[in-house]
Image (cartoon, rainbow, N blue to C red):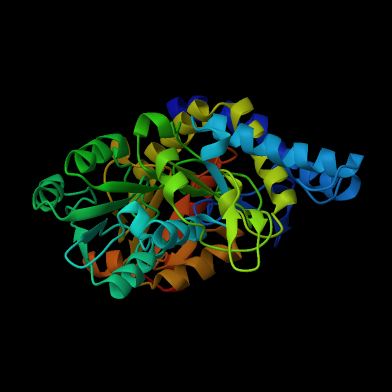
Length: 420
């Protein structure tokens, strides 16, 4: 088993590890083992250099000014948008920059959900989410339903962390579901949802679909045109890019009918004393000074993933998951949460009998092993699982089986501290 997985993963990890400066850090004479990419991804030198070069040599306002620096700045910003759009099978006009995926979802909840011109949510309508959603794909819909008199309902999950499709189909068949909001890859149980099939089912029932792809874009080939969801959102900082930049891909006819969410500069064509006219897509939804450096960094991150090959990243992380799911049960009292490796993305949540997850995180952290602990911004799912919190290891292109071995060894030492 070790030899097979090692040959499948070592070459990619060895090739790219030197691209990530932060991995050279040591603590207590131990190398950094970063297993928290589901929370935020580390940045390769190519992304860091792109942001540094922009701020050092180009930094200027976009879209308005005509001097050389400003024209270069605009070209870099819009060029990044074009590469981001192409990478996910979208178009620049349908690709809107936001601060993060959370803002993108809130944009849809306000500009689509509350707008009568787009068939807004109202009394008697149902907004359907799943029990495995991140808070960012729950709370905006709670607020929308509270404001509009609609009902929020949940698609149940099975004991092994899969969506209960019978429950979904029954709720869609009721005929009053206006929106299905679903995660592409769960940040807790790791489940990879067949969002294209879910979208087709929801559309057949007359529902609009929003997909949260925050965990998917860094590790899976994503084609938003093939998925055919009405809205697809994700965030840059999990995909090897900077913080402060997210993306909304929207269906053109919906985006054109939607009113802007935020008002101000750059989202207008004209401003009169009493009313204004809106800019074209995508700028209609990008009010104020844009995160230009962050967009440039995101474009560099897309270039980086394209060069590696997202299919290679997917295969690499899948092999790591298989290896980790074979090794972690060697730790007495350890229980893994979620489906088998064939249905799982690049993360594993687990508990350890006799230890709170926060103690797990602190103790393995002494060995410079970084895992996430807590409810992972998914408290409803934790209640469904009858848990308060879990520990979570998540993988990236630079991880290898030595990182998993280090985690397992550190968990054994943690048990010794607790005399388990």
